[in-house]
Length: 119
Length: 229
Image (cartoon, rainbow over all chains, first blue to last red; front, side, top):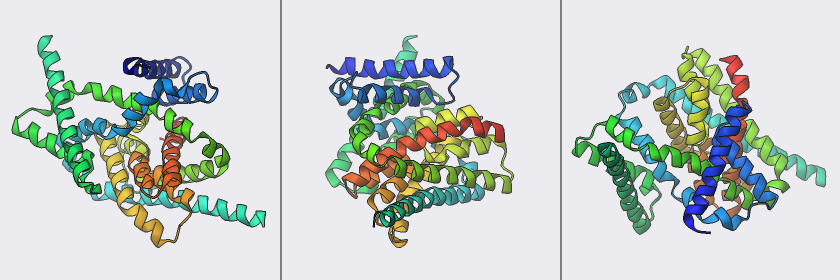
């Protein structure tokens, strides 16, 4: 599949996802709905991986490029200095630890229980 | 009309040039702190300041990247599809891990926001801090947050988790491949997924799965959160 068609195919899923979110009042971002739709069609073999693989892998590989404009916007925005607030940073650090350890420990607990029940 | 066109073209070319230059540097020296996200941003920042281009002009020209970022969320169907057998085999483990991490993160943000008396705008921007940027921006927008706040919170959480996470997991003696990958993907989204790829293939796949499923799980929380806020 040529590049342009691959990208257009991905764009169709984005548009369809946005449309579905609006039309059915689904509280998910349109892009996430588009991704789920594409995944379902891939799993059910209605869409072949080769049709979109090149464009999708390329985009993911170079995703950090797309973050650059946002970081620039952040640094140059007049709100940046007040954001370096001790309370904000404390919340961010603590909640990051909670996400990290919450996931790690529950996965390990699950694996331990599974292992014990298999013995 | 033509000035708008040249303005956006200029912004896009400048961003691309900074990215490609920093990617070359990264490929040459292969140091993780030379990540093109940091060096590319620094380079572009210098160019913008040097040429005296105001932020508003740059942002007007760079709206294409916002669209591409949304498109890249759709693209995540491909790695998820490739890891489909792994996902099906470990569905319960993945779901319980990612759900526990994501909800615990939201809960911490909620409790601490009450404690520090943050207003709704800040709390709405803090809640999606652990998911990938395009999804975080949509979620924060839906809850009434602001872009600048959300970008900062997402990037700070991601960078912090990716710097401290691996050390912390090692120190606490968590060696399960799935636990490590899922924890990094849940707390540091894209940055965490690429970090866990450095451990190995299974960890990387788990990181990628965690990053996408945590975005979906967080989005599902929106209706509940709208009632709470």
